[in-house]
Image (cartoon, rainbow, N blue to C red; front, side):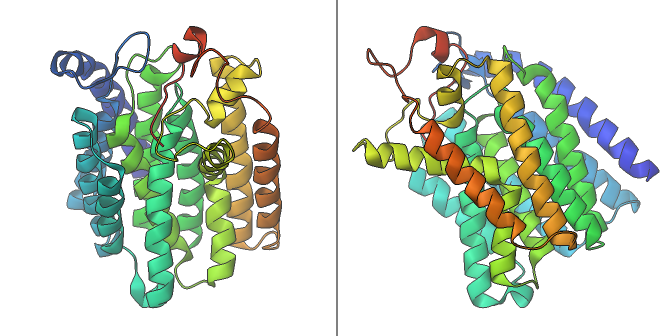
Length: 339
């Protein structure tokens, strides 16, 4: 208990300090998101990865919080995915490279002895989907970080229920690191998450969730996993449907994500983040309650219905203005990301 508090506090402080210190080097090296009125430095993701890995490795080496072989392998694979994301931040990387790289990393951490081959293949696909969904979710100030914190607490609760102490520690440290980063990412953001941080966050959360559900039925696990990542999944569903219905290629960038449409409905940037954060909390709460058996598995169906309802409503809100992809007021606060 005491170590958990110390570890979380340390991760928060390290991530906050590194995020602040990383602004100048990122600007100097040109590692920025230029799809805004002002370039946004993207070393916030590096700060999260370093803080998470440093605190968890120190605890493992000191013997106060052993990660275990599976969790240690997850952390190494997550760091590899983060490195791939950093390359994508520095220079343009094709989507298929990110998909293949993340898939290889996921294939190295899935516990096939518990999931089986078929379940393992589905788990790899799910990890890749969630990692890329978090990357796509990083289209507004503080959004991916907020959803990541909420999800980390939920998956951590599932891990604690399964007595996976090492995994629970890793998730609490990740949540704390994201919180430290959010000190600089809340609107107006001074540092961004980037592909490095968003892919790392999504990969670790999805892989950890797979660990907690290993050994359970595929159908019941699908409901829990979807509930834990409802907002990120809703964003992907919304974008895919909008681009298909609009006759546009899926790979073409556009202001048609969740936050873009909510901003066009009149919400403030902070209001969008709070609203979607509450949505993430609702889905995560249902996922945790289903996992521990406090409510029936059918509860996940209500999350799915809610996601489809929200997507249906937001599809009625234009994803772009008639005069262009986005107005200056919107693009100053939201980023058009390829996702």
